Image (cartoon, rainbow, N blue to C red; front, side, top):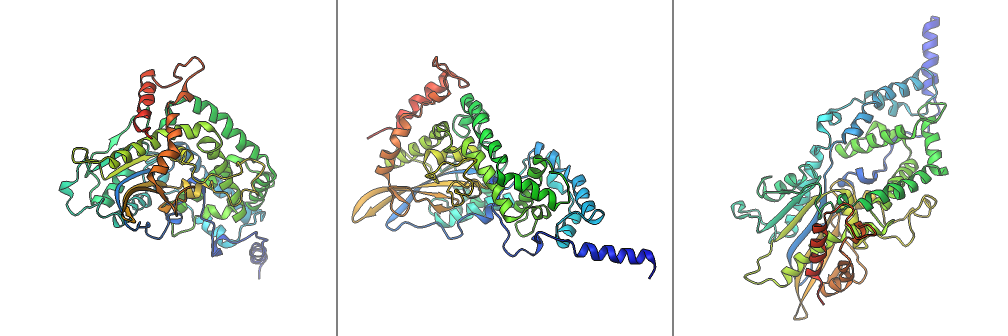
Length: 469
């Protein structure tokens, strides 16, 4: 054996014996919960929606976020830079022998190529998995409520029967409609403007924008300075073969690539997920939970107020169904397609998945069993469904409402196994609706900060429509 062959043999043997942290490729139970970029396939409730004995569903009201989609332009710009970083990681392992990824994970990373989802012209476009998520969600709803979502005769489907509105959902409504009615344009979808005061109320409120820029970022920055996050940076840097800590933004880009690829193809592993241990994925998930807790959830009072217009819309529709007569025909389904912030605002208004302890930078470990987990409440295609039922219980006609989050019944306090008495719901949320005047968006002189005065006046008056004893 010549000297060169001997050198190669020793080198290969040395690489093969490299000290590794773990082997993601051989993981039988990979961690799948990745904040707002979690695939809906992994989190929706797999059993059929509960039927309610002695009750008939009269109306469905639903708020849905966009399905699995391509990254934004800014995300794509950062992700395409991973090609150069990929080469550095390979060199760290094969030439410098500094890395600690196992050979199978390294081989997967070598094969990684930028796919069509990372083309700028496809930014935020619904991915095929997102189309499938929406179609299947619609079909599951239809199988549970066939009398409300009948598709046998599409010629009879009208805007009187079904209301569709969309904002920042990027064709999700079309895929959903195709799942319901077999055609994606059975009903005209109202595209609401950027200054819409129903589906994206937060966009019209400068008070919210200015406040969240301080609150949510401050808490996230504090968490990034914690021991848990700093250990993540050190461990990932060492694992990839770097002697110094790699930039935090680069770690977040790798995390985004990992979770986008897993959401695009739920049956395959992303080589970028092999960068992180399970515990490190937990830390990154908490970082995003913390961010949205203050940006759109219980971390700030203003978020609950911004969700009240959607609650108001839902309850006004249900009140009309309660009073329904031959001259007051109501739609069978109201379907709104919006974004993560609007959904989280509404969940906050409804007090859904609220923890007793507030999420903070210092209590990551104490909040391991928290209710506020964006992976489960605001994944891709996340949704809240409210169904109004007319019931005959013990020969007494009564009305009830049931809420479903990701197709699982919500156990609201004061309701029986998720089934809420309509009178209780009215009593519970009337105080919220009485304050649904958006004064939060006014300055100290009573002048609207970003909303036109006439819009605020309309909102204030509209809030009185439902408020009844």
